Image 1 (cartoon, rainbow, N blue to C red):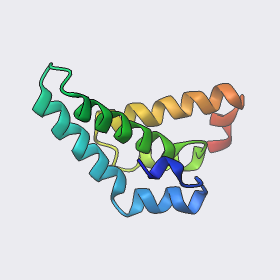
Image 2: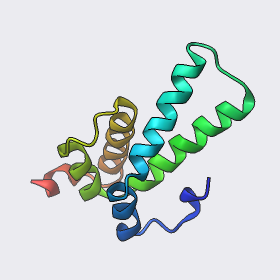
Image 3: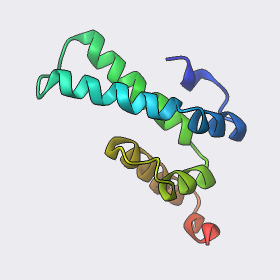
Image 4: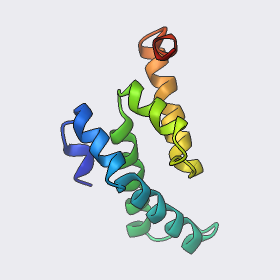
Length: 104
Protein backbone atom coordinates (compact mmCIF):
# COMPACT_ATOMS: atom_id res chain seq x y z
CA UNK A 1 0.00 0.00 0.00
CA UNK A 2 3.02 2.27 0.27
CA UNK A 3 4.02 2.21 -3.39
CA UNK A 4 1.18 4.47 -4.60
CA UNK A 5 2.21 7.00 -1.94
CA UNK A 6 5.69 7.44 -3.44
CA UNK A 7 6.20 10.33 -5.82
CA UNK A 8 6.04 8.64 -9.20
CA UNK A 9 9.12 10.02 -10.80
CA UNK A 10 10.46 8.29 -13.88
CA UNK A 11 13.46 6.75 -12.12
CA UNK A 12 11.27 5.27 -9.36
CA UNK A 13 8.91 3.78 -11.93
CA UNK A 14 11.84 2.34 -13.89
CA UNK A 15 13.34 0.78 -10.75
CA UNK A 16 10.01 -0.84 -9.85
CA UNK A 17 9.93 -2.52 -13.24
CA UNK A 18 13.62 -3.48 -13.35
CA UNK A 19 13.75 -4.73 -9.75
CA UNK A 20 11.02 -7.26 -10.35
CA UNK A 21 8.47 -5.54 -8.11
CA UNK A 22 5.82 -5.63 -10.84
CA UNK A 23 6.51 -9.30 -11.46
CA UNK A 24 6.08 -9.97 -7.73
CA UNK A 25 2.80 -8.05 -7.68
CA UNK A 26 1.57 -10.06 -10.66
CA UNK A 27 2.44 -13.31 -8.87
CA UNK A 28 0.62 -12.20 -5.72
CA UNK A 29 -2.44 -11.34 -7.76
CA UNK A 30 -2.34 -14.69 -9.58
CA UNK A 31 -2.09 -16.57 -6.29
CA UNK A 32 -4.99 -14.62 -4.84
CA UNK A 33 -7.10 -15.29 -7.92
CA UNK A 34 -6.32 -19.01 -7.95
CA UNK A 35 -6.95 -19.27 -4.21
CA UNK A 36 -10.34 -17.61 -4.52
CA UNK A 37 -11.47 -19.31 -7.71
CA UNK A 38 -14.72 -17.51 -8.46
CA UNK A 39 -15.32 -16.62 -4.81
CA UNK A 40 -14.88 -12.92 -3.96
CA UNK A 41 -12.90 -13.95 -0.86
CA UNK A 42 -12.70 -12.29 2.50
CA UNK A 43 -12.19 -8.59 3.09
CA UNK A 44 -8.45 -8.93 3.64
CA UNK A 45 -7.94 -10.70 0.29
CA UNK A 46 -10.10 -8.15 -1.53
CA UNK A 47 -8.15 -5.32 0.08
CA UNK A 48 -4.84 -6.94 -0.90
CA UNK A 49 -6.02 -7.43 -4.49
CA UNK A 50 -7.02 -3.75 -4.71
CA UNK A 51 -3.66 -2.68 -3.22
CA UNK A 52 -1.80 -4.78 -5.81
CA UNK A 53 -3.82 -3.24 -8.63
CA UNK A 54 -3.20 0.26 -7.29
CA UNK A 55 0.54 -0.40 -7.00
CA UNK A 56 0.77 -1.69 -10.56
CA UNK A 57 -1.19 1.27 -11.90
CA UNK A 58 0.97 3.76 -10.01
CA UNK A 59 4.17 2.34 -11.49
CA UNK A 60 2.97 3.00 -15.05
CA UNK A 61 1.02 6.18 -14.28
CA UNK A 62 1.76 8.98 -16.72
CA UNK A 63 4.88 7.33 -18.15
CA UNK A 64 4.32 6.72 -21.86
CA UNK A 65 7.84 5.47 -22.50
CA UNK A 66 7.73 2.93 -19.65
CA UNK A 67 4.33 1.63 -20.82
CA UNK A 68 5.67 1.20 -24.33
CA UNK A 69 8.84 -0.49 -23.11
CA UNK A 70 6.87 -2.83 -20.84
CA UNK A 71 4.59 -3.93 -23.67
CA UNK A 72 7.46 -4.47 -26.11
CA UNK A 73 9.43 -6.46 -23.51
CA UNK A 74 8.69 -10.12 -22.97
CA UNK A 75 8.14 -9.21 -19.31
CA UNK A 76 4.49 -8.32 -19.67
CA UNK A 77 3.26 -11.86 -20.04
CA UNK A 78 0.74 -11.49 -17.26
CA UNK A 79 -2.59 -10.53 -18.78
CA UNK A 80 -3.60 -8.42 -15.76
CA UNK A 81 -0.44 -6.29 -15.97
CA UNK A 82 -0.86 -6.00 -19.73
CA UNK A 83 -4.44 -4.77 -19.31
CA UNK A 84 -3.35 -2.24 -16.69
CA UNK A 85 -0.63 -0.93 -19.01
CA UNK A 86 -3.08 -0.70 -21.92
CA UNK A 87 -5.57 1.13 -19.68
CA UNK A 88 -2.84 3.60 -18.76
CA UNK A 89 -1.93 4.10 -22.42
CA UNK A 90 -5.57 4.75 -23.26
CA UNK A 91 -5.80 7.23 -20.39
CA UNK A 92 -2.66 9.02 -21.59
CA UNK A 93 -4.05 9.20 -25.12
CA UNK A 94 -7.28 10.73 -23.82
CA UNK A 95 -5.36 13.26 -21.73
CA UNK A 96 -2.82 14.12 -24.39
CA UNK A 97 -4.01 13.53 -27.93
CA UNK A 98 -1.29 12.22 -30.19
CA UNK A 99 0.66 10.50 -27.41
CA UNK A 100 1.00 7.32 -29.44
CA UNK A 101 2.51 9.22 -32.36
CA UNK A 102 5.29 10.41 -30.04
CA UNK A 103 6.41 6.82 -29.60
CA UNK A 104 7.13 6.34 -33.29
